[in-house]
Image (cartoon, rainbow, N blue to C red; front, side, top):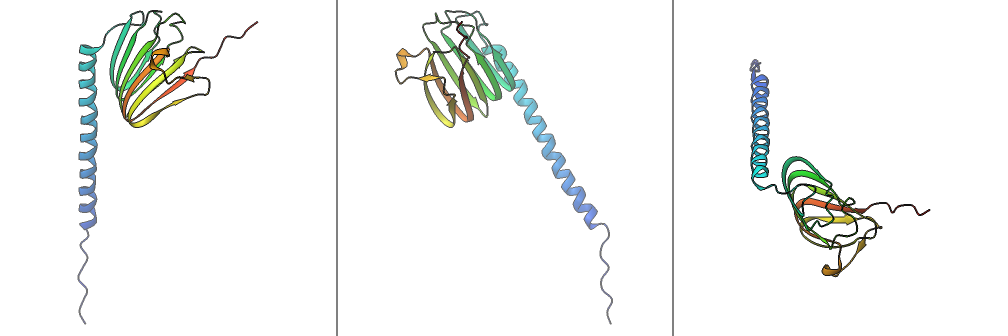
Length: 172
């Protein structure tokens, strides 16, 4: 009778170490990609960011993080946001009712934006890409671009925009 061949004792350990090595390489590559994107985003933001919360025009570029804007200038005309794997919050309630209309241009790659408008504002939007725009029931949508208080031009890939109306002040 023949003896069965002995099973190698170290084969599973070698397989485990090879799997661990592959996982470690993938993790290092992912962290490296995140670092490169973060540095590239900061360099782009340094070069392209314009205006402040009291300016007539604002532009922000953000990757891997978030941006919060609360403009206060009643003559605000344009806000441009480029979001790459980032989120944003734009609160237009500080602008007031005297604004002739605000153009909001959003380009998002795996990012999103929350927009808050004063009660009673009419909103028009154009969206291209994969994702979408959602509103609450208090936002008045108009199909006339020129009659809108907020005009949203959005392009997104796996991103979206949420628009909500601020609470109307209680009447006494």
